[in-house]
Image (cartoon, rainbow, N blue to C red; front, side):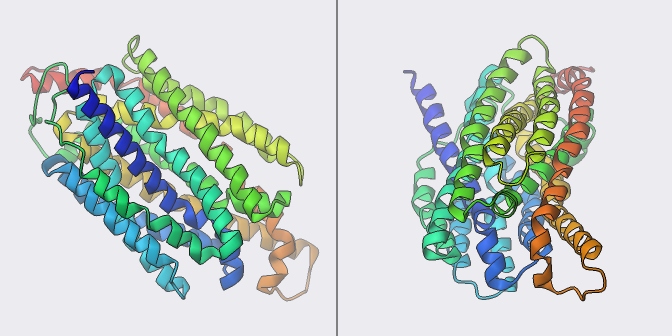
Length: 444
């Protein structure tokens, strides 16, 4: 095998592992939601804020890390970030209050914000455009794999040893992985482009260049909608299975792991393969693949939520189809961003996309869904217990149905997301040609 090819594949394997570990650590909270809530007497809104606080800081600090990924050694940036988030995840297991846990999750978010800009920028230089979708799909396979392993392992650890142990077990392996990341060789920027442009960049503010690209605006909007849905699901899926379908903590973790991991992983690989195949025929092919997949996921999501209490098999089957189609989104979109932006702007482009994706999507998804769940539970209580003073424990019989009603927000937003992706597909070809012409010193 060509040495450069071997280096690229090795780097991809390491970056996949880092991304999987990133989402493993991030999802520990979702896997231990119910025992944590019961231990500290939290509401669903408070649980949502635990995830939202993490995401808010993650989104904001991603911007300077994106600029660093475009100007500094990406391998070192990733190694430092991995070390920080591993240490703070481990210490999260020792927290003694709601406030201290939020503070530690905020710190972990700073470390994790290095992952996507540095890693995707590296992949863009290791792999050519025609194979970038498949490379991105392998990298993004870390998302469902990390989430599923976190559900499976963290749920089992929490059930046997308590939720604190789940955080400690999650953080420790990261220190070994940080050492492994140092073995990746930093590639030359732009070396995999059809014409090696190196560090060349169009003149002007990098942020204005990104926001002046119509396709990027549609992609940014799609990221906010999609991450709202994905974080709402990942935060409350185990709790929904426990409350509404009567699953144990460990079984809820296992089912969530299957739905997010095996099924989500297949969807991620499918998105990379289908996106690369379609982009050879049409420049906007990747966005069309993502839009069609999201549109098809909507009826499957509605059908999953329509299953009656205790219908674990029916829910799992329908949600599996919805999850498969929803995960097609990631490799298709990430590869499109790399098609639209020159190599010296990709780290910043990913950071801007992630800012909106997490600030307006992931940050709102858990807390809005938690608020809706509490709202519906209180409404159900008020309709059946008129005149009886409301106490926190009084809501327990109504929490299952309250959460069910809140979860319907996911397929509803899926309809809007599909429309945004189809709209974005109409501008991709023009934006790619305009970027290339500008780098060549021509007018598009």
